[in-house]
Length: 317
Image 1 (cartoon, helix red, strand yellow):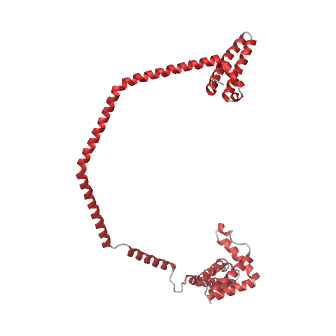
Image 2 (cartoon, rainbow, N blue to C red):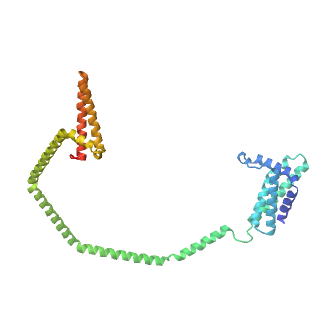
Image 3 (tube, one colour):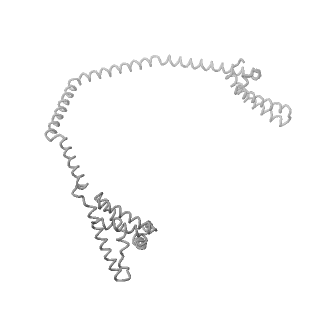
């Protein structure tokens, strides 16, 4: 009976949409005025499309409600289609004639009554318990099962007593064992300390007895190393000074050796010194002194790089 009004109204709107366009357009305009500015922009601008959409929703939800299929959901949908009309379409106070005001007032009261009936239908559980009640009962059953699985007070006390007795007995055993053996442990520790002290004293005596000999031996070793290094350095410097040019010429003649980086660097440095010396020989006066000074400087650099090359490559090529 409740669904019949919405089904008939939806069918009539679908069949005669043109007759409801003006009414829907007025409803949309009033909704834009009632709603806040940030929400008014979401109101559709096509009244014909809105009228057909609301009518289709009323026919579908009304049919399901009449058949008893998903009655709560169907009632909620019908309430949603009725609420905009209740807010926007029944502004009877703005009518021009008394008859229009009475008709608008009656329509508002009718829609309000239908909306109330839909709210009641949407809340009807048909004798079935609500979700809140079922959740509460499920929680109570779970709590009972948990309590049944937990040990009782007497069982807890028994377990606590057993644990206490075990800890006390174990503590007594450990304390007794420590008391019985602490003297032996102290004697063993003292013996270890005495042995370690004797080892330290022997090591200190050995160092005191031999340190003078070690110092003499060390000084002699350092002197020998210093003399050997000096002799080797003098020999190396003499070889470089006496044979640097011949060695560099031999290294340059050897194709494999000439490709080595140290030999290339030595060759470049020697060429630089030779060019400076050649310019000094061709100059005179202050210019000759200048180029002689540069030639000496470049030759020292060349000798260092040749010595480095000899060390890297070897004396004999």
